Image 1 (cartoon, rainbow, N blue to C red):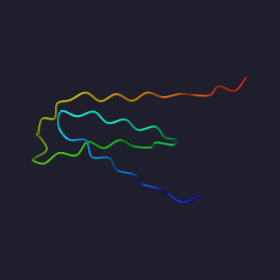
Image 2: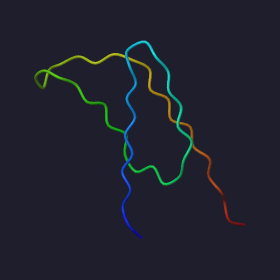
Image 3: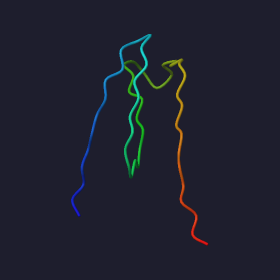
Length: 52
């Protein structure tokens, strides 16, 4: 099975939703140095199927 990468651009002050499967990473890029401060709300909701 091949690796698929998807990217979303969320402008400041905006909200974007994504519904999908097999999300393996969420990156929040920033310009500046290692001490750059990033502020915002990040919400990740998951649904799990439990086997009985």
